[in-house]
Figure 1 (cartoon, helix red, strand yellow):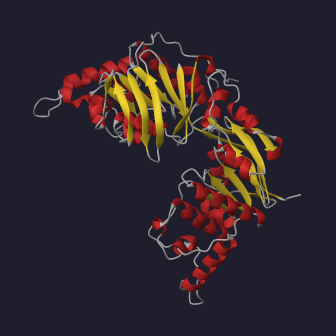
Figure 2 (figure 1 turned 180 degrees about the vertical axis):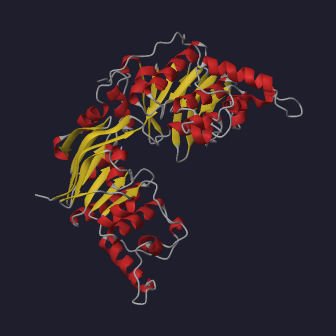
Figure 3 (figure 1 turned 90 degrees about the vertical axis):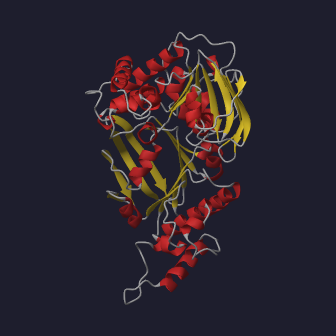
Length: 505
């Protein structure tokens, strides 16, 4: 029987009163590949950040090598033999491969100088243990492909004599050949007795390489099984659960003709052959996992990304969007997922942030702002959206997350959009503010605005959407409406299974 090398006991973690982890138990054996799966927001990332020293738990214990330990930093974790390899590798691009491997743990000569010859020899040995013949040891890391960068980080983990290596979505941006090479290396590490924690949304990979799987949902472990005892359907059902949510009612009446038609839209490396229609009087939701291409499609409609091929029709006419400003002028608005860096000017006033999208309307020919108009418009939206602020001149960064989101929404409502695309509209806001935003979305539909939401929160999609488009790796894998909008159908489609309407849980 394999020895347990890592054990998490009743780990809990909260952020701002929201429980991200609730008494989580997790263990890893020597020479085991233990898969960790769950929807976005299930708690996987929080757990591995605790294991790798990036976060401290609020409650619970970690046992490593048979001893209770406190892992207070990533550096300490590495020193103990716990390393992490992420989908977007953390590298020093201008340093060589060898320098990246030994940075902070350089091999020294008796005189205290860096022993470059010995470091290169040791690097050769590390790669040889992975059955890799390195021809790139002296190349700058930034010149390597992402796949090779990952190999270097694995070699670095071995330089630390790591007994635990965490792989977080490692194949997300790898080619098929690079992914197969990674799986071979993981098999080699398993044979060497290294314990592997493997996080992936690609269930086919889990069944290809893992020995055991732990399923998380809403911050809790809902299943821990040997792979031989489960199938894909069981894992999907555990991930999805039964999200019992009340639908938001809106009085919008679906138009006979679509306002927006997208045909065969393609952008190499981001999305492929995307076709859909959006109608007035309905809430259309894009669901899927992070990185599935949903945001890229929205940005193509808004003019941030230029597609390689395909057509967009807007209000019955062929439409080529040249830029975000052009999209705004035509009545298309986009609320980005990262409101603090893309949607707001945090150090400027509430009033400025609300009216910035319509500055041309409130300035004269000399570019001087009509402050009376600015105040009137800002006051209108503060009242209409119930924005809680000390005053119109308050800096936006001083507002709560929910009220910041309302300010971004007010900014876009000011341009009187025909289409409003909301990307993760309630991310990072509390339950009460989330309910208010949901009601606002329903009211926007009643006003005749075409509302398209992109959300990683399954309960939110189930609550709001009249129709759902699910994407996986840049392609549409399911379109659902009515009774076909179910948690199981959405998770199946989000993990790559093509689900036909009528196949429900």
